[in-house]
Length: 237
Image (tube, rainbow, N blue to C red; front, side):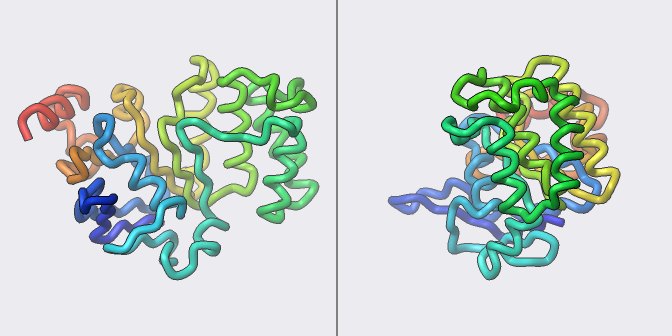
């Protein structure tokens, strides 16, 4: 579903934010992308979803190159950044209808999904309010619903659990598992290692732009906890 091939991203001065990254996320995967601040996670994620341009390597979504056909890739992808920037002058329902229009979601489908996810995240009653009146957690919930509204084949999230209360975090984990059971894939970064260990079937650990370890979660952590493996790799690499 997502193939990252020899991806390298350089910033001004020639410094490599990500150095020759290779990853494959298959349909059905919940793939955790782990690293300390500045490791290259967000740079990679923004390149995957077409926010950042890059020259070296390639990224494919469902066999389509992000470089060659970015619009086709975006049609089947959804992205939730770590700090969603929504349109505060719209109401919640206006924003969701705007996103639905962008992805050509039918009236019946959007109504059903908005009700389903709105009830799940307990914000249905607030969808008529201006987004400017929402708390950070409510904005995060709205961003999640907007990402799910077109049933993406690839869901990309940057620190998705930040700002969510425990019940909303549990709801999101349940939805992520359900989405992947239907053939989609999820690629997300997180600092919450115990969540990654329990939720992800695959893990990749990155440091200073270089991939340190990747594979099935049980293979990556072995007999240790994911936290112990991560700290050992980061401290001793």
